[in-house]
Length: 220
Figure 1 (cartoon, rainbow, N blue to C red):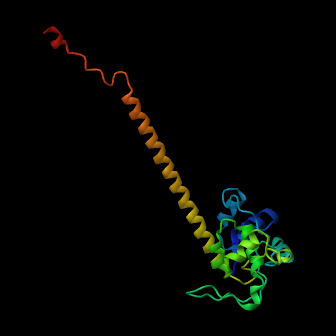
Figure 2 (figure 1 turned 90 degrees about the vertical axis):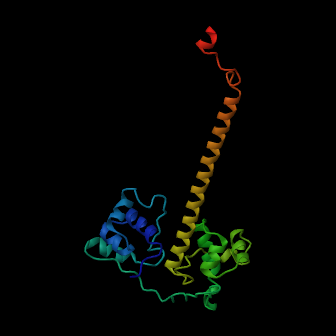
Figure 3 (figure 1 turned 60 degrees about the horizontal axis):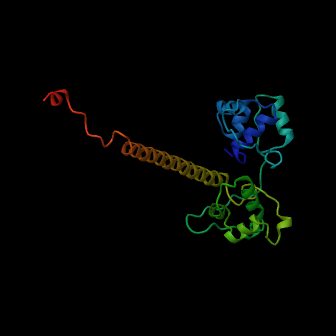
């Protein structure tokens, strides 16, 4: 089943901006109704910015109104004529000549929407170059005035699955780095505490004093 671009962000937008039921949103976004309810309760997708599927041309306003009027109806994605990008098992991603002019728009969208992605991640997703990415980043690209951020999925430069995999990989790496930093901080704190304890023991006024004689030794 085809899903909208960035399903969870789309679900956030639908929860916040429509009167669709949780079941309708869950069916459209490939989620469980309880997960959608969690979004409404503020327990799921915290911090995720909603993505408007109407503005992205994935569903019409009339289609949303139709489903709001009939809770049993289900949203239908707008059919797209964009071809699915070819998947290559090895080597750099091939981008059709007709799509290469769209890459700066996709780069601008990825930089704005997912700043956590590295240049290498963007390069793997849409088959561009680090030089082009940098020029879009620092706005020195020769056509910068005409660049308009557009999703690489909607442009047909990569699939939603490939984008999700890249984001998941980046988030997992960031989480691992965070946990490793926390472990290092805990080890450093413990080492400092141990060092201070050892220093305190060495400088204690009773540390070098001989043991007091026992009562038997005193009597003798």
